[in-house]
Every structure is written in C-alpha cells, then in structure tokens.
Amino acid sequence: MNKSPGRSGRKGQGVRTHDGKAAAVFLAPWLIGLVVITAGPMLMSLYLSFTDYNLLSAANFTGLENIQRMLDDQRLANSLGVTMIYVFVSTPIQLAVALALAIFLDRGLRGLALYRSIFYLPSLLGSSVAVAVLWKRVFGAEGLVNQFLAVFGIDGPGWISQPSTALSTLILLHVWTFGAPMVIFLAGLRQIPREFYEAAAVDGASRWQQFRNVTLPMLSPIIFFNLVLGIIGAFQSFTQAFVVSDGRGGPSDSTLFFTLYLYQQGFVNFNMGYASALAWLLLLIVAVFTAINFWASKFWVFYDN
Amino acid sequence: MTTDAPVAPPVAVPPSADRPRTTFRVRSVLRHGVLLLAAFIMLYPLLWMLASSIRPDNEIFNSYGIFVNTFDTTHYPDGWNALARPFSTYLLNSAIVVLGAILGNLVSCSMAAYAFARLEFPFKRTAFTIMLLTIMLPVHVVIVPQYILWANLDLINTFVPLIAPKMLATDAFFVFLMVQFIRGIPRELDEAARIDGAGHARIFGRIILPLMVPALATTTIFTFIWTWNDFFAQLIFLTDPDLYTVPVALRSFIDAQENSSFGALFAMSVVSLVPIFLAFLIGQRYLIQGIATTGGK
Image 1: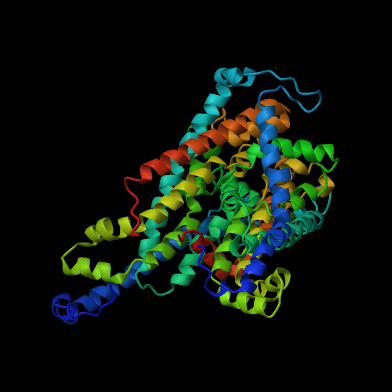
Image 2: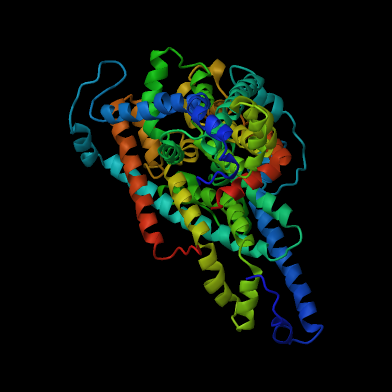
C-alpha cells in the first residue's frame, strides 16, 4: 500500500514530513479513548481480578484467590454451561436460516428489497428491552404461543417460567434476528460470478451439487466472517436474559448468561474484584474460540486469491 | 475470464419451449408464497404487540389474533404516566444520549479514519491493528474500571459516561467503516488540493468529509439505533429515576407491573420502538449497505 503515484515531487516529500504532526491531531481523540476508556481499564481490571475490591474499601491483593473461587463456584459453572448452549446452538441455527433465505432471495426475485427489509428489521429490534418484554409475554403461560396452541386443544406450559424451556425461548429470539447475517450473505452471493453456475449446469450439476460445489466454497469466507462475529456477539448477549428473568437469570438459573452473572457479581453484590476476574475469563474464552475458529478455517474456507 | 466464447447456446437450452415457462411461473408463485408466509411469521409478534396495546386488558390474554374488536386507547396515557415521571422525560433523556453519541461518533471516528486512510505516521500498522482488535473486545472487560473511573469523577448519574467515550472514537467499528470508505475516494483529489496549497485540515474538511456523506449517514443511523437500544451501559451508569433512558424506564416498568396493565406495558414498548422503526424507514439504504459492506474483504 505504499505506492504513491503522484507523490514523487519535492512537494509530496514536504507534505509527507508533516504527516506526523497532522496524524497526532487527527488521532488525538482516538488515542485518548484508547488509553483512558479501553487500555487503561483493561489493565486495571486485570489487576482488580487479583484483588477483593468491593468499591467500599481499598483493594487487597489476594493472589489467585479469585481463580480458586471460580473453580468452586457452582453458579459460574452453570452459567458457563447455559452460555455455551446458547452460543453453540443459536449461532449455527441462525446462520443456517440466514443462508437459506439469502439463497432463496438471491435468484432474480421480484420484491427482493422489500423482503430483505422485512427480514432485516428484527435484527435492529432484537436487542431492545421492548422486544424482550414482548418475548416474555409471547411465551408466558397465557401468552400468544399458548393461546394459539389452545386452539388445537393443547395446554402449553409456561415456556419462560420452566427451567427446561426458558433457554430455548431465548435461542429462538436470537434466531429471529437472522436478518443481519442474511444481508451479508446476500452481498456475498452477488459476488459469485454467474458463469460458475452456468458452467456447472452445463456439466449437468444438480441444484444441490451447485450449492455444494459452487456456492459453499465461494461463500466460505463470508460464512466464516459471520460465524466469528456471531459467536463473539452471542457470548456477550445480556439484555434478553436480563429482562426475561427480571435480572436474576431464572428460573433455577436456566437463563443465567455469563454476562448476567458478571453483572450480578459486580453491580449488584459489588464484588468488583471477582467480576473483573470473570470478565477476563470471558475474554479468554472468546479469544480461545476465535482462535479455534481461525485455525479450523484453514480446512474449509477458500480464498481465490 | 470474461470471454463470451461461443460455447453456451447449443448445450444450454435443449428443453422445449413452453413447459419450463409454466413451471417457472408456478415456482415463482410458490416462492413468493413461502417468503410472504415467512415474513408474516417474523412480523407476527410485533403486530400482536401493536394490537395488544390498543385492546382491553381482559382481551389481551384471550386473543392470539392481530385484529382488534374493541379499541381501548387508554393504555397509552396510562403507560405514559405509570412511572414517577411522564414517559416524555425518558424519551428526552434517551434523545440527549443518542444525539451526543451521534455527534461524538461522527467527529471522532471520521478524524481517526482520515489519519488511518491518508496519513503516514510511525507505528501506523500497529495502531490500525489495535483499533481493529478493540472492535472485538467485550465491553465487560472494561466496564468495572470504567465504573470506578466515572464514580471517582463523581459522574455516575450523568450522561457523561455514555457520551464521552463516543467523543473518543471508542466505537472502532465506525472508524473501520470510514477507513474503508475513504480508501475508495481517489487520492488524486487530495493531491490536487495539496498542490494548491491546502493542508490536511482543509483536505479533510473540504474534500474528504463532503465525499464521505454516505459513510457518515450509515454511522449516524447505526449509532442512533444501537444507542437507543443499549441497555447494559445505561443500566449501570444511570440509577437516578429522573435520568432513566427509555430502556431502563421500560425495565423498571416491568418491576412495577403488578399494579399496572400489560396493555400499558405494551403501549410504552411500542412507543420505545417507534424511533427505531422510523430510523429504519429513513435509513434503510445506508443500514443495508453498512451491514453488507462489513462482510466484504
């Protein structure tokens, strides 16, 4: 990226030396933000995670006590389990639905823009408190779903109030917001040259074979992109579980997302030290899964250049 | 690759004339049928909420339909006044936070993006990589120290913790989006201005900014929607009911639901979604473009 075609004159050189000063000015807000809002707090939270800080008294360095505590923490183990199920069930389903509809919409369909907008809308609303409120009512004992089931004489359970089904309703809410990855898939599909399909058709490839041998490999970088971002995002889900369970992660901790547990420890119980340790555990988990993702991508993601 | 070689015609069109035409039409109708059904199912919960906000409370739990027999518009005034303050207070608070965030993001992110896209400076690659990495950083890792920081500055229960970070380009996603956009603007334009003696401030203000209006629009609309929806930070930094933003107010509404109606709760939920819906209608093009380009290479 260091080709500078019109830059070889003395004038260009002159401006070049000024860049440092200009860059300092243009980057100042970002740099201050990086130090004060991001990097500084990161270091501090790393330090706090080895203390018993509780906001009221000074922080005592407690070494690995918080890690010991994590190992013995049943609720933490449970919340990790809940989060893993949520992330690794809802993300693949969401992407599969997104991909299926993107392919369905891709082939020269009339009204594409309208469908795309309708399917995209829930992604914008999905993280709002209002929709979480709605979900709580839709899947409540007397909610929309059970009213509908009653028509067929089925007496549905209180989906949200039963530990066995509560998490599924949140997974469904997440799947409902498939519009954003779908739009990314649509943009990717548009970049696959039509000739590839024509060539495949000439060779007698069926629809499925075309999907398998043209669409999937050509789209694999975008599937990968959506997968990485989807997993990172899902790990950080908070609002839905918070609202649906009145901030407690119930029933029986069945919707106690990791972030919700972290919030409870830090901002309800003011165990700021322990919450910081949890935050770093989250960062570690996300980093590990992202790394695994990148490693595994070598085997299924194809880049044509 | 783009040679129009005379290969295709004889092989590609062997099937007879009108049979595929009719199957094509049937298929197209079928496809639209499936899509319309899917769209309807997607929107059903929202339509049900809208309908429930204007039907009497005793009917909400007896009707799964979206048609309203008896209109009951009292939920809106009831909900509006159900909390300690009228709902307009929370709308106003949200509006202040959102406007501050938009302004902050527009100024700070565009400045950083200009530096990354057009300026040469030491450690540029490293800085750029760090910037990209911060996009993926979970907010939870920094929220505790941030809380302590703002608490020490006595700024909890002000809008500062929600707006100040935006003025410091912490939404790196937008920096990245703008960098990508600026890279698409021909360098010759800056070069010409440079030869005319313009400095970076002028080039940025007079050439780049006017040309990157689409990227700025995308940023504005995404910032609007994300900040309006944001719950986590607002929940943590705002505990004074007078300062509640819409999401925090809605959630305290749920706590008080024992003595208020579901209709009122739905009504205020609808009110809280209206701005997002409007932003969506106005900014659709930029939203779709913004999200679509993030997937590009």
